Image (tube, rainbow, N blue to C red; front, top):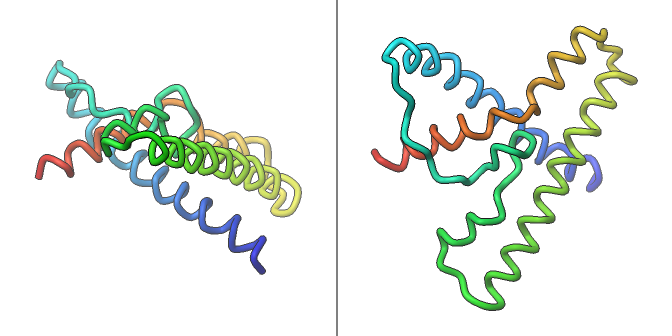
Length: 131
């Protein structure tokens, strides 16, 4: 039961983030292209060079942590990113072997975790922080 719960929580968070990021990118990406300008760079909470949902190690600066707190935060962040990566990998494996998704369907599911969605999530968060 504990093992199942430890997989479901990160997977649920990831799917929510992916859905929000995808929706935002679809809605605002076209609008930005039409206007001919890009949004200013949002704070790097979710790393653009990492898989969807993984956090940047530099975001600890937002909390002004010192010494031991910063080290503990960094360790928690590494643990989170590892869990996210493992949850994504397990989800895709289950989708392939247990659910039996086709190669096309599996490619779609893999795209949810691709690099490139995290900057869109950062923009969403920056917009919400301004309100």
